[in-house]
Image 1 (tube, rainbow, N blue to C red):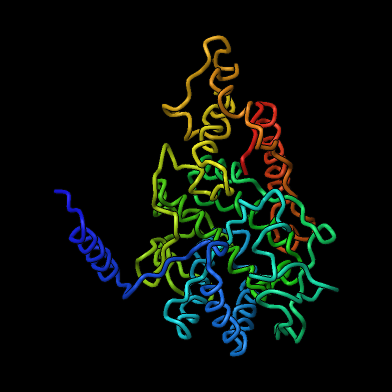
Image 2: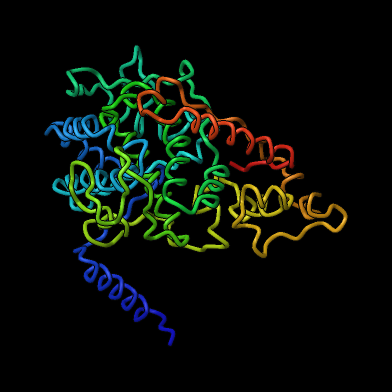
Amino acid sequence: MKVTGVAGIFLTCFLAGLADAQSGCPRMVTRRDIATLSDAEWGQMAGVLQRMQNDGWFRYFADIHNREFGNIHGNDNFFPWHRRMLRDFEEIGQRYDSNFAVPYWDELRDARNPAGSPVLTSRLIGGNGFGGCVRDGLQGGWTMSFPGPHCLVRSYDRSGQMQSWYSPEFIFSVMQRHNDMHGFRENMEFTLHGSVHLGVGGDMATLYSPNDFIFFLHHANLDRLWDQWQSWGHAWTMDGRNHVGAQIGLDSGLPHYGDPVGSTMQLGVNRMCFRYAGNGGRRKNGGALSLVSAPLQGQSTKDAEANLETLPLPVLQRWFPALVKGTHAVSPAGGAGGTNSTRSSSSSTRQDGSFLVYPAPLTDAWVSMHRFDQQKVAQTMEEAREFVDALNRAGYKSPY
């Protein structure tokens, strides 16, 4: 039976509220892209964050992250622990404003030119430091108290600019190619996670990175991507090991918090009383690119996905296996190794796209700080370059 009109709206709202109640969540909040917040919405949120700073909460989270650093990086506690920490931060914010929800920064959309992002302007987060100290935006002029009194520092990794980050296409590929938590986590931690921390620099490149609110925006975005990956058949996928090499299971306790890993695995259950705007929409053979990153203004989501689907079959098989199933017609002339005949209507003729560029690699200091396996990091960096080369050779033009 299909119910429409006012009755349909009422029923939808009732069922949504019932679902929240059954989950144990008295209410759900929606985490939104920070770039979509109105001036009034951002002003209200900024007021909460200023009060949290005044009451010592930024120091509190910087201290926790500093102490637990080795327990939550370079192992498979990474995603559940940061989800639990973000929710802790959000719950504290809700003491000041019950509507408070941690926004996310869709960094993939800005990956080509991060320093030019509207997020890094005086209207929102502020930009690079002057002499290191951030002077504008939310935290302009703030004095951070951990590990000792100092101005909030940002120091972009290219003298006022930033090296390019990982493209939406590459992260979309990572999410398709890794069906285990260990492989997914390792590739995300070695790529997007590290490149943003290093690109912003300053406090973000230290063990006490939660001093910078960008930390929370960044990890909310990583958590959003994990939520998307979970929806592709990995809702309860938790394998791998912790910092001492012990197997992690759903009943394993999270460092500092002690909560079982399983308590973080589903949004809307236990304390995870939040959802992400945009997640939960259409999924096609493993998801649409639009669910990984919002398209730029004036660009078509359909074009972004269609450009990928018309790549040569060997490229799809290697980098986008979820798009192969029923979506790719091989050109009779070119065969399996040839060029798809339909590309003439999309990527090769697009004038508003650009070739992909190599993303910034992790620095030796960052690898050492996290005690990463240097060989694995090198392999991941080389794979990222191979990805760029493969798509560029195929004539792919990114609309991002």
